[in-house]
Length: 193
Image 1 (tube, helix red, strand yellow):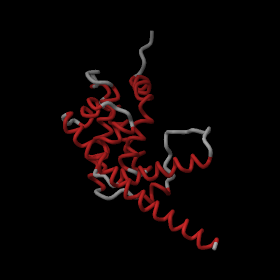
Image 2 (cartoon, helix red, strand yellow; image 1 turned 180 degrees about the vertical axis):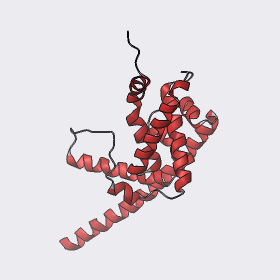
Image 3 (cartoon, rainbow, N blue to C red; image 1 turned 180 degrees about the horizontal axis):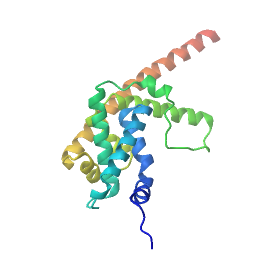
Image 4 (cartoon, rainbow, N blue to C red; image 1 turned 135 degrees about the vertical axis):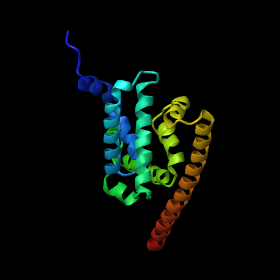
């Protein structure tokens, strides 16, 4: 019986996680090209150290830890603010593909996602990453703390603070959104008179 080559083994190992790694990087970095670069860098680093993976943790924990470090390195290099215009221009692709919903609901869902991305981009990365891991990727707290290499209490604290900040940002954006809607409604009333 022939033994699989390292490349074949790694491809089988990484395949279930590639999409998740990319979307995690995208939600952290906020730019498609940066996320693609980081995800590739993560996969390359994982391949280089594949032989040293002992299985002490789950593969996803190990891989998301590498992705986390790649994102931090990228942020340190860039030291800039996420460009929301670039995000919108790049036509961010989300994982959810639901063709069974009406165009109105689809538009509403797209707007919600855009507002969430915008709100996430306003968070410092130490708060952004716990939200991405726990709330968007669905990773449990223990595993997320392992990935970030921080105590569980620190993760919970950051997550709590991040959620409060996100809530305030979204409320502020909602108020701006509602105020523009009310202007439109007032304009309709004026035109109807």
